[in-house]
Length: 454
Image (cartoon, rainbow, N blue to C red; front, top):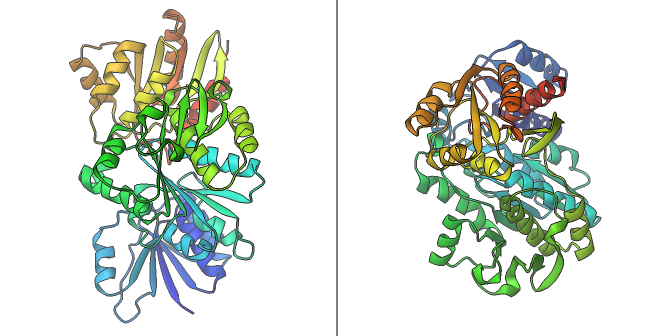
C-alpha cells in the first residue's frame, strides 16, 4: 500500500485524505495547529483509518519517505519542508492537482482571477445545469475538488466547473482545463507570491494550459497583456461594446444596445440580470462565453440570466430594517474587491471594514469611502492601520469598534442618525484574525443582522 502524507487539516486536506484512502493509499494528515475542534476531527477520521498528527510538521525520514505529499491551498508552496521533499525526489502536489488526476476524463472549465471568480463559477454551473448538463462546481468556491473526485470515481460529471486560486495553480503542474477563464487582475496575495510579476505568471500558466481561453477585456491589465502577446484560441468579453474587443467580434461576447451578444448571436437583454454593478455584468459575459463553448443552448443561458440572484457573502442583501439595506460582502477580502462592493451600493453608506490586512494600495478604495460613506466602523487587527490611512486622507468619521457585534449596534444607530441607505460589510481584509474563513465572518454578520429589531 502506497504511503501518502498530507499537509493541512482543512476541507481540502480532509477531502484529499478520503479520496486517497478510497483508492487504497495509507494516509496521514499533518497539521502544526491544535484545537478541540481539530482533536474531534482526528477522532472522526480515525474511524475511517485515516491517521491525523496534530501539533507536528511533516517528517521526512530518509528510510521511510512517502510516495506522495499533498498540500492544502493555504500552505505556502516554498516552505523548507516542501523544498526538502522535492530535493529528495518525493512528488509534491496540491489538492487540486490530486483531484485532476481522478477527474481528468471529464472536461474542465477553470476560472481564475483576483476578483469575480466565485460569481462567474456559480453562473457557469447554473447555466450548465439549466442546459441539463451533469456538472458540479468545486475548488476555491467551498466544495473541495477532491470531494467531487471521490463522489465521481464511478460516475464522472459531464463537465467540472472549478474556481482555482493562485495558490491552487501554483501547486498544480498538469491541470489543463478544456476552457480557462481569467476574470480580473489586481495586486493580491503578495505576502505569499512576493512580486506582481510572479503572481501574474502563476495566473497566466493556467490559461497557457487551457485549450480555449476566455478573457475579461474590460480589465486593463489583462487587456494590455492581450495586446502584447498572442493567445491561441482566445475569446474576449466587454461590457463596453464590440469596439472594445480584442480580435474578431465573432469570437467575442459583449453588450450592444443593452443586449448580450455572444459570438454573433443575440442572447438576452441585460435588464433581465438581477445582480448590481458593471463588475457583475463582466462576470456574466465570461459565464455566457463559457456556457456557449460548452454547448449550452441560448434558452438555458437566458433562463439563468433571468433567475440568478447572486452568491452568498458577495453583495448579499440580508435584510432591510427601517428602510436601510444590510448587505453582506464578506468575500471582499482585498482593497479592489471592497472598492467594487462599495461602488455597487446606494449611498450614503455605513461601512464595516477590517480584519487581517493584506498588502496593496488602498488609495482608490479610500477615495470611494470619502465619496459614499457617512461613517466607517473598524473591526479586527487592521483597525489602527485603517484609522491612520483614513485620517491621512482627511476622513475622520471612523470608529474602532472591535468586533462584529459592536459594529452592528453602532451601525444601526448611525444609519438612523445619518439617513443612510445601506449598512455594508465589505472588509477589504482576510478574516483569520477573528474567524476561520470569510464565510464564517459573513454568517456572523448575517445572524447578528437577523437579530436586530426595527
